[in-house]
Every structure is written in C-alpha cells, then in structure tokens.
Length: 80
Image (tube, rainbow, N blue to C red):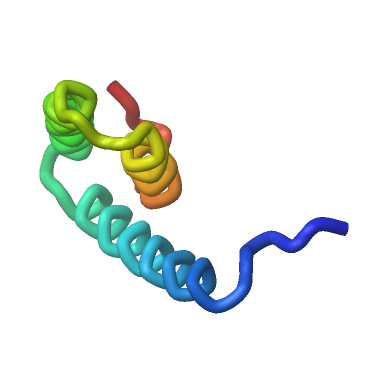
C-alpha cells in the first residue's frame, strides 16, 4: 500500500486544494452560464501556462502549477 499523501507539508497543501476545489465547484454551479465560466478558466490557464513556460523557472514550478490546477478542477461535466 502506498501513502496517498506525504506527511505534514502535503497534508496542508491537500487541505488547501480541497478548499479551493469546493470554492470553484460552488462558483461554477451557481454561475448563470457555467460553460462560459469554465471556458474562461480554460483561456486563463492557457495564458498563464504560456507565461510560465516563457520564464526561466524550474520545470518543477510548471509541474506544480499543472498538478494544482488538475487537483482543484471543479469536477463538472461541462468542459471546453
């Protein structure tokens, strides 16, 4: 059996990711046009990702960004 989360630091990060996911899910579900909102999230992601890639930063930063974005996704059937 593997440990689902590394202790201490990742426990805190996991809690923050869960809180962000709940917030995004609530915002998405209560938005008058959820599909448009998710599309805008997608556009913002593309822009942010391009900015990160263009910078002289470690690959681990980009991987962390992608992991966090995936972890806090609002779990909805509506996608771009």
